[in-house]
Length: 185
Image (cartoon, rainbow, N blue to C red):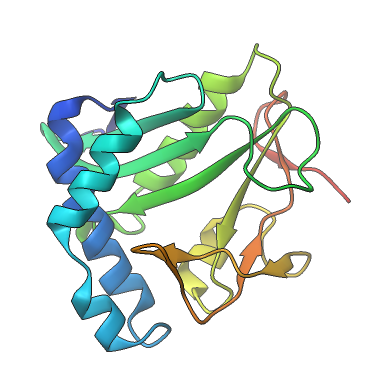
């Protein structure tokens, strides 16, 4: 398999990001969220949302994409700073990490998290968190520090509506050291 490349997202990537967002949700959350909710997700609405996010100043939101043979296969977004009221100073957040189902477990997610850390390293950011649905076994096994020490809160959203499920926040991931480490709390 050719290498997966990570780069900053461009406006031309919005359609691919939206398609992956929907495909990833439908694959990862089937059996966790209602079929009606997953089937109602709209690629065109996701495109509008992603276009709005990516048209910002780039200071409070950054999106990276994974690319394989010229096609977008995943996206990872950073919120700077974390949107969580209880996040410590210097904490960024990954509010969106999506990989095309055909690329699950092929390194795109890990590569995007490493690239996100690299983007933040050397700046004032010391930690990074992300939210995962506790029923999402694939994400829990992949995400550093998420499983047993997570805190629950209603965070997952789609189309502006809170999903009827709690999410688990990972332990802060240190961005000052390599390799990635979770920070004890």
